[in-house]
Image (cartoon, helix red, strand yellow):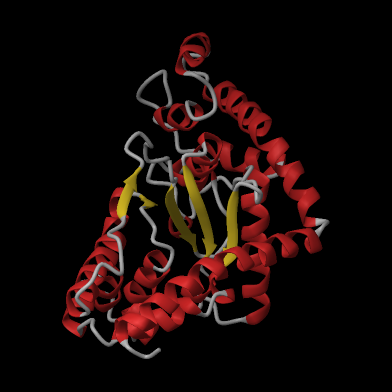
Length: 317
């Protein structure tokens, strides 16, 4: 039976944290292990250009993200890991879509409305990003796109654009992708109890050193009204079964320092092999760049075939 195609894109905009891992990255590795999809993992560097306009920072972030993915266990023999900018069909298809998408439709996008509400000077890339994202998804005939509940609109835009193109050009050029909502993934709390996010500066880095882990955990805001510090416990249960935590928290009821020290040990035990694997990969940049080049070759083959079909449909070849 033919496998379905999964596509995910991540912008290279900074260090991942444990919220990124438990919220999405772990599921990518789990999906790879099950082997139910042909998976394409894209480093969305052209999308990142809306935020990063410094070549050294961009190059560093791209390489770092590739290393991060390999360090958590993505296997380039089982998935395709590639850079968006290596596949020119993405931007070419985005222009084709630009000719059928209206401005009022794009003005409904969350990112545009958020920027407008903050009275920002909005660049065309921010306004137009849903079109490029639709091209990213539709170019690979993606069946599913892993997203959180707050990102469903990305897939809805791709579906709408696919439907409109199919209607205008009287065919079934594009299949309609479905969002793969990871229902059972809880929101990972930050050290202040809010959702873990770089914008809140409340994260625990995924590849943190022992010292970074200690500093972050000791900064977790504790609730002094009870014996169980909720924020500590909610992070701790990511790393140890609740059946193990219950006696631990009962034994150290009200002893917040002891519970935080136990959390430090468990986080470091989990992160240490990832950290070591990442350090090893970072010493072999040529290997990582070769993996990206091989991924680009595979992605380009699929994307170029689809683009040729599209160009025939619109009558330019």
